[in-house]
Amino acid sequence: MARRNQHSKEALRELALDAVQRIAERDGPHIVSARKVAHEIGYAPGMLYHLFENIDDLILQANARTVMMLTDTLRQAIQRKKPINAVLAMASQYLALAQQNSRRWQLLFEHAMRNDVPVPSWYQHQTDTLFELVEQQLALLAPEKSSKDVTLAARSIWSAVHGVCLLAVTGKLDVGGPVQAPKIVESLVRHYLLGWTLEK
Image (cartoon, rainbow, N blue to C red; front, top):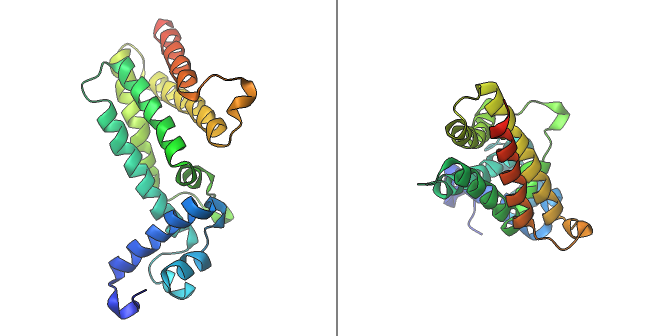
């Protein structure tokens, strides 16, 4: 491993963020710590605090990469699709990400801020962008709905799909029988949207 004088500050940041994701994928999201990350890249733990505010900032910066990857994937999935098919495609891609990158996905949602500190606004903005993609399609699907109804529907769909993903990546979905997760997600979203669009 090259030493400090061979890396710029930005290069060190990238090394640390790569290490967070690598540790999460290899050893599990609960193993990620400043000490583990520093050891992974061959530096003292104190070095990280010259690059990040704290361990929360380090993990959030790494999670932001996953959010950006998911956002880009969802944008590509909805291109030239009718609204209902776009929402179905986003749900399918969300499940695929959870299954294919399960430990990064778990790090994204299982990390809790220390001392109940609020999530910073820059990170909240990134996650809000994901919901906005869904809300845009719901507004096109049912233009007569209020923005409040659209927001609630987007959160309801995400909560339900997220629940299926959680069961799938933790191996608990089989308890309910042999139905595959993609079919459950499609049925859930399709029937929710059908009922939602018929509501007065």
